[in-house]
Image 1 (cartoon, protein in one colour):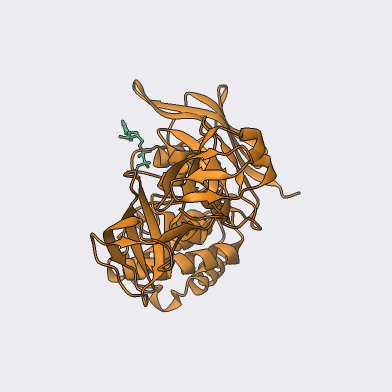
Image 2 (cartoon, protein in one colour):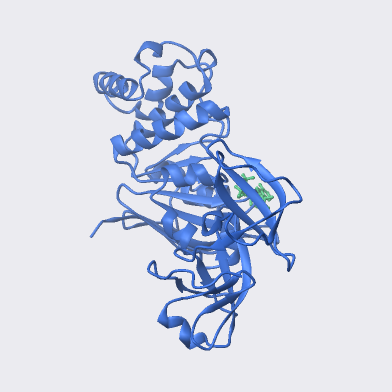
Length: 367
Ligand SMILES: Nc1ncnc2c1ncn2[C@@H]1O[C@H](COP(=O)(O)OP(=O)(O)OP(=O)(O)O)[C@@H](O)[C@H]1O
């Protein structure tokens, strides 16, 4: 079993009377890249700062490599936690060269060891040719790589990265996402990063914690968060979603305003109950052979595909992907759609996730 590097248990933090973090629990195993994902103000940076030791906590426990660094009776200062931090603005020392910035945290080592280590790191982040430049002479992406190399130089047990791409333009951001992932893998470092951008989290992290209002709503892989969200809040935060009211019929089928679809055995326990079907745009298939039922409210061109924003007769808004080569339907017109329940998610009346519908189920009848 993988070794646990970071364990956060029941962590509580307040700014004055405001509860910033409420009973936070998370765990990172060796080499894992975790991500805190959430809207602005949900507490991501505060949690990172508590782990780093920059923020006093009100309750709970933080353990790093089996050593308690923060609890009711213990507080290990940041410089003794063996944590590297890459700050949002990189916080490079402007008066030091690239090489001096990278070597800053290893000044206790012998001169020869320092030089060897800095040279290795410069090569790893592809900055050897820029070793004697100052931060102001570098691009945003290069500055980020200096900050990363500087944080990694003392070989920390854990690396924290706060919004690592927020200072980069969108083209560079795309490239740096992949570069950062490769570098984190190369160093095999356990890392926790913070972002409000879903694509960044999906691209880089092994596991993600979706945060809201100072809580982690759900922790899991990107696949599970997207396809098995445990609440509406998580589902809505991660990409386009529609919540279609439905009912389980007496023979265990799902009745929706788009028709009746066959589902797994297990749903029979919910006979006669109201449920909600969570539909992603790829669960709704546009089909010109079906009687037009959904009114086109908006069409978004996304290169390879179109997104139709559709209004059902009940007033429900849903979203549907179609190839951008398909004939474009006009706003205000009606189009035919059917449900593909292979991956749709069902929520019970109390909002709990029921299960994923079995892949073998097929639509039985369309409305
Ligand atoms: N120094 C502070 N004093 C008082 N309140 C603060 C302080 N820093 C943050 N807060 C508040 O604590 C809450 C959490 O802030 P935090 O910076 O952790 O959120 P975040 O999720 O990282 O947001 P962002 O993505 O905008 O950086 C917010 O309501 C914020 O206004």
